[in-house]
Image 1 (cartoon, rainbow, N blue to C red):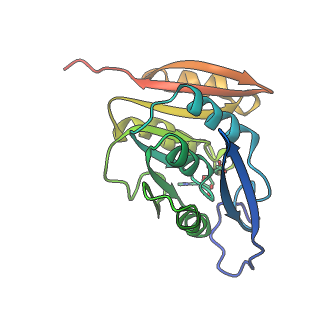
Image 2: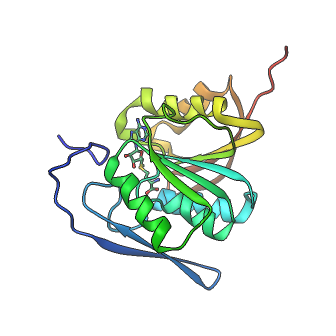
Image 3: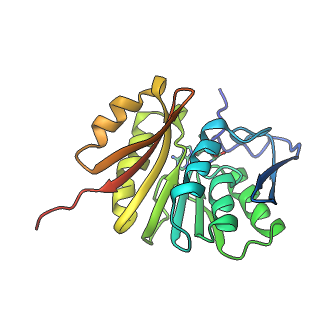
Length: 201
Ligand SMILES: C[S@@+](CC[C@H](N)C(=O)[O-])C[C@H]1O[C@@H](n2cnc3c(N)ncnc32)[C@H](O)[C@@H]1O
């Protein structure tokens, strides 16, 4: 069975356009077959972005893990002036993210392919993700727990997870690494901000 994160070079293209409006301005995304939520902005991703727009820091470095066509990282690059790095395992998603960087004339963003953090060398002030639940618990925990190694001191991890996809269990599993705050609950989606726990040396 093909998942949205499967690399399938035989898949044909059928581009579509998705707009997101904020503060009287618009960012336009090109999407395609074979990527997550190809026809409309996912509810959880939108809620996550709205929360970041409301309470997140501007002008910082940000890593969007599992970027898809780039909605989260590029919206924040445009409207919060984050220096956004976008990564995904799906080649087509990375290609779309690159197109969307160019078409929206965003200079403070870049995208590349990576399995979880495999190709990530830098550290970031914030990491943000709508994690790929269907890829399995190992990948999801790799992204969420692994973020701690790629955050600067005092960096924050922002993520969205559904209650019925194990939000409470995942938070328990992360509690040895982060202190966490659920900043919004809507329609069964939790928006969580996690701060790395300080380790005593
Ligand atoms: C829930 S989707 C979110 C997509 C996008 N951020 C959005 O909001 O529309 C999760 C993304 O994670 C990607 N993904 C799946 N497994 C991955 C892995 N092992 N490493 C990196 N990205 C992965 C998928 O290709 C997909 O684009």
